[in-house]
Length: 120
Image (cartoon, rainbow, N blue to C red):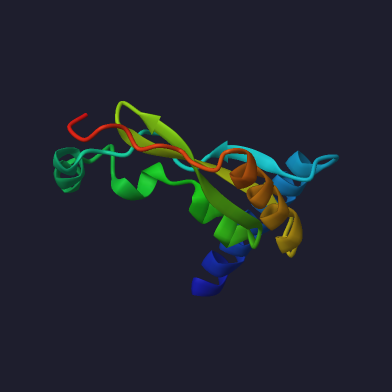
């Protein structure tokens, strides 16, 4: 029985990888938010285990890139309401050089993303 589950999982991963490569067709990188939401406060994070609809694991799309073998990096993108946000750059599998060059270029043009004043 587990072989069928494994085969379905591998097929799903293959299909996801094909869609990602299709999105990259004609492009070197895909840029996306590192997370689709602002980082939670300590109180919000502590309340997550009690929530059935908003679990911490459901907030981070970066795991998909790991699953697909793509090269990706998360970069600081500033602050929203005093909380840090990031952007992810994604390249094709085995294209470390492109994602690292793009990250270096971004960081060179945005050398400092200042933290907001404490207490915000």
